[in-house]
Length: 216
Length: 217
Ligand SMILES: [Zn+2]
Image (cartoon, rainbow over all chains, first blue to last red; front, side, top):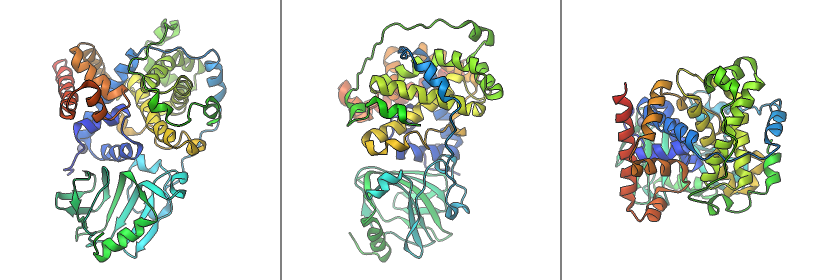
């Protein structure tokens, strides 16, 4: 039973395309899991369709149609297969369509994997990533720079604000200080997108600190 | 795939945001409903013809109707002319490729096409922040997913009618939520309203839409 949902204004912003890409991906994953929010955003999509019908049309350039027809026979780009380390999890369609980078173990019980175009990863900044942790792992108390969107793919974690289970949506901002912990009953896989880029170089260190319990 | 896009030069710096125009008005455009469209009776039939027979004629009809509207949508979101046109083309290419995913029982053609355009807009914004990512332009997030189709075509039609009957301030709240590519906090500043008021207007508009749809069933 899903208990944590995005607020209505976030669903409207998602439907209109004004959420950042990572946040939009998190909401899309939630929608696949949550029939309630799907109904709500379905109405927004309809509203979008109506507004598309009513928007002032802008004439396409003279050669646009010919150019378009010439492209219809182009090969369709193939979507990359999700990496094998995810095969035992049922991952949302919206996530399966993304490029998922190599996973990196921080400790034997924690790994993360960037969900981002390679260019962004290369420069050492990832805004969107998968985090996996085994049962009973507790992260150190920390706060956030900017907003952080989370979708629980599998398992559960708890912090002071509640317990988040598979399908749940979580939004934290810089007012939240928490020490999320994976519940005892199993592992936890989350998709996270942060507004402020996460530096990959410091990320493992941060998690190691987190795992060992030191403050930062 | 992105050759056309690179050719436009629209993607330098923060063009997408800075050229934001609150009221993009374009000249009149040829917008007569084509005869075959009326014979096919609706855009859903065109999509079905594309899915089943790769019907190019049906595609040309759809393109004639939707491409200028899509361009209008992207312009209103703040894209420059060249980028708006490219995004309209990309949307239509996706329509051609994914037509089999369209389920006329579960969505209206305009709604389905809108969700594709919306996803492309989300992707385009990211590329705009980082021009080095051009080579990988339209990938991933733009694919339509099953979660984008849930409201029945009839319910959706009722909603379309309802939107056209909304009081102006509520209609504006919906338009803001959709077309203005700005965070709610910026919209609040632009309107001189507290953020909470903007959020509650969006919420109010949603409640009103839902009620209108239910009244009609
Ligand atoms: Zn929900």
